[in-house]
Length: 449
Image 1: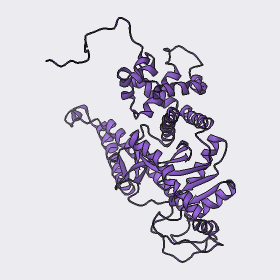
Image 2: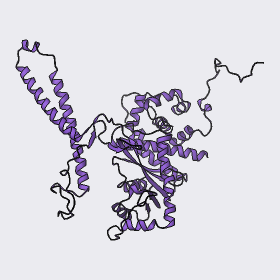
Image 3: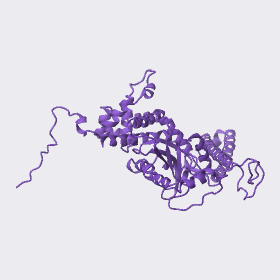
């Protein structure tokens, strides 16, 4: 006896075209994103097209925002993949409403509206607060490294820059001399010479030299800033000095003021990025992404990007961002030992007197010596005393499950591990777009639940 199957007729055609919306289940994320974007203020997106002019009709900004946000919320970041999904994926087609922008259009829209997406992040965070998903009772701050769009093979160390600069200058001088000699030769002599486009070679080497000189200047500027923060001055003679400029005990500095280490590197593809230690070992060109996460529903209320590998000085910037987005400050802030700094705690005590800081003084599970001089390190000593209480230890234990899951979602659920655009300002805007999309995904799940 033959098996009976459910009817299967792939050649059967519909008499009437079906509605794409009928193919998606109720409560689908695309519906939530569409409704939320319609409730937001998109006037900044429309302003770019308000001047008119002779050009092709632009695609509707609301449609483009919905498609991009949904793409980032589902882990699709490439403009080519987004354009392909608009043809193949039902949810993308519903949001696109029979619009099929080319990948260049998607790429350009994202690049042209980075500032607008930054403002959109603020609107979504405030909407989450209206929904009761953000209360600013306790927030946790954490940092994570994300790879820059920079090639490791198109970079050069400071020592290599110095030797290459000398070589290029010698080659340019030789090419100029050869060009002068060739100009003085007769036509017959020129016929017997090997064919070489000397002006083109000269221009190529001059462009390379200019790029190296600019990279050297960037490294020197970074080192000058770092030396100044260490208390050095151009006339210190490589000797440590106190605040009054008098020599003090200690080993002399190995390099003059503002001179980078020979192994210091700069990227030619993304000069703003920095070499940072990669999780699991090794080093790469990366940015340091900072997030502040609210305890209530794991909504990110601040998302910033810096090109400093350390978290020490970033806490004031993150808390300022929280106050900018929310118009209020958190009652309690949890941060790990990477944010420990006497100067930072002193500054925050003045700028955020109503916010309780809980900053670890050492790595969890490892004992670390703490200063005992209350006159010199008053805030650190007070923090050490606070961690002796059971309540503070209980509060700090919440930090890991508040701050770290969103970073894990960004990297492992969405798959966002590398920026699509180069430059610090563009990286900041794209990270806000990622966090905006993840917040909406979280809000949609909470509403459906």
